[in-house]
Length: 356
Image 1 (tube, one colour):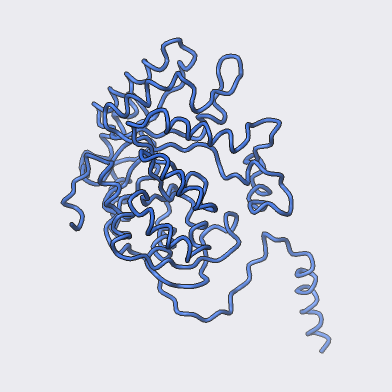
Image 2 (image 1 turned 180 degrees about the vertical axis):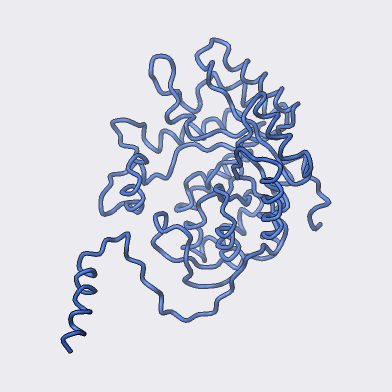
């Protein structure tokens, strides 16, 4: 009896001092489970990043794509100039049907009086060299500054020639503006992203150093309004995965705006009934995207979209301490999210790779 108490005491002491990071309860719920490791239909991932790839690494990447049923990967980290040309060559030399490469802006000469025209001209050359879209990173409108140290807003007029050139060339702009609105809120017990901000305090956006979330996102929406002839893909559900009604109103207001699902499946998976209705209503404007390359994490996306499973794990605790639920989307909606909507926007993709 004494030995049992001796063994039990350390366990009791640990439970009293355990941190929230250590807490990993095992569910005792017994419900039907459907692991989905391969998408029901071939899909296009419109939001991915690949860096420093060699021929051998590309071979491995394609093998992993095949296992997921990923037909096409869009590499948003194409760069510009010589870097863009190299990225296109490495990815498309032997697998020209499997990859799309987006260019990026250079801000080295952002203070030049003719920056907009210069950047637009560079983009036009990048398109000649194989780029099929433009990716804007979150630094644009958040931390990008001029020579005086002032923040350059997303809708600064110096970028108007760039947005106009994208419309002229018929290429989309996948734009990541801002971050989750919780990063801009007080880091207290009411903040849903408290754990993430505790682990990564530099992600906080306090009001004494950054503009408000509403201002940053409002500038992005102003760009959509100013350039109706340019297609914009609002990355990460426009950080409105937790307010799909508002996101839907934006889609209705801006017919040139689409959206994608990179890094926000946790928001969709916790509201299965309303999210299912929303996906059906806006099925022509949503595209598959993942962001970070981690093959096993795609399985959670597939399970949310394709099953009616209940109470299953998300893949990253710091983003979501809740469980996921499946939407059980109809096939006609799945096809649009997985590939049909992207095919309307990405002009160079081989249509024969997909079901009609």
